Image (cartoon, rainbow, N blue to C red; front, top):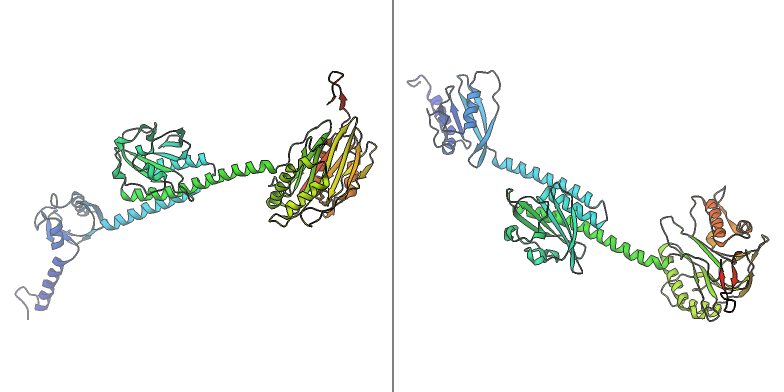
Amino acid sequence: MTTFDGSSPSARHLSVNMDAAWLRAPYPALVAGADGSVMEINNAAGALFPDARCGAPMAGTVPDWLADAHLRATGGADVDVPVARGPYRELTLAAHPTVAGNGAVTWWLVDETDRLLAEAALHRERERTAFLADASSRLLASLNTKRCMEVTVELAAQHLADAAVLVAPRTGRRHALAFGAAGTPVTHAMAEIDANAVPGLAEALQGFPPVPSRWIDPATLPRWAVPEAFDGPVGSVVVTPLPGHGVPAGALVLLRRSDQAAFDPSEEVFARIFSARAGAALSAARLYTEQTRITATLMEELLPPTLQQVDGVEFAGAYRASREIERIGGDFYDVHPMSGRDGDTLAVLGDVCGKGLDAAVLTGKIRNTLQALLPMAHDHATVLRLLNGALLNGRHTRFASLVLVSVRREGHLTRLRVTSAGHPRPLIVRNTGVVEETATSGTIVGALPDIKATTVEVELAPGETCLLFTDGITEARGGPLRNTFFGGRRLCGALAHCAGMPAEAVVEHIQMLASEWIGDNPHDDMALMAITTPRNTHLTAVDGHTPGRYTR
């Protein structure tokens, strides 16, 4: 059975169903002929383009970019028709063409607005992630506080705003400030400012969350809050804290010109993320600076002193720590002029058990204790007994060996009283080149409740030297086989060649030989002190009546 138009009932039913499906299709679609008129349009397209009707021209009823794309598609060129894209109202549409044999084109429209927004957001987040990674590297590249402030302001002015001002925590009455605008160098200043003049700044400096940008009126900003290099009126402002390690590291003020878009909420959140990283870097830089200052202050008391001539007697010292990167350790020496009741100069050289900072701490304690015991320096036994008690009462378990030498110049001779407490015996080099070992001996301090030591007296004629040293010299391993001790015999031989030399030359010669012997081998701390009666020093009277003084 066939219908009047020659089609079967089933074919006609299928055509009706396809027409209904076309009209109800969720995607907007329309068919336009070769003449540019609308031939068919479904319900979704009709709702999207209210002026587009069957028979109406595309021009003026659909977006211009779609009408232009249809003209190109029906231009007769035997090429694939590309997908057309363009805006319509608040949407971004993609028109996919299907060209029929009679020249008609079916345009399927797809809303790509959400996809494009998502891609833009993803691209923006990727850029922000890359920026934060680069910012972290640049911020952590230096532990100099001023440089860290500069990098923070540079990055903020280039990537977050048109200008930035970093306000550091107050020092006394003033704040350190860093100003920067895009494309200009960062400037610094120290100034007394009123943080309450910028809404939220006082709170940000205390580490509290920032106020929203919309709460800040740019017109009320004080002059100091706007960098001189900033061109144009301020349109929007963000104030965000710079969180640090336990205490705030400051605050960051971001400025945009009035011809730029105001900060949106996502940009404010990103500014806080950047500020958190900048604050951590600034806090680390300030902590390092403070620790460096404290270390330098404490090290001043631990470093060996510079020795010179005292009362006509030459003193010279040399120290080398066990590690090249360290300046302090367990070996030490000191010279205390005119100590004790008899007016002797007290020279001390010692060796604390251990190396590095832990040994240096005990070294400082011993030196301070000896400083306090100077009024009793004429009695070596008492000094060693009191020092031993002080070390035994401490919390550490380390001990030390040392040598005490009381020095007095009498005429052309120098008289020494030498006491060793578990330390290598000092050596005497005579003008003849003969090297003698002093006969003093004793027990170490800080280990046993009782300490014993013997004191010997020695005289030095002009040109003769008493050398005090630690076992880091004699036990230095090196030489051709790299495992041989420098040893006492080699030390005595080197010292014999120093007969008649000034104290400074003696110390430099022995230290040079020991360093050459060691090479790059690991070694213990090494300390030397030379006490020399100079040849060119004599006692003269000032006016022929008053006591004389030593001159060079």
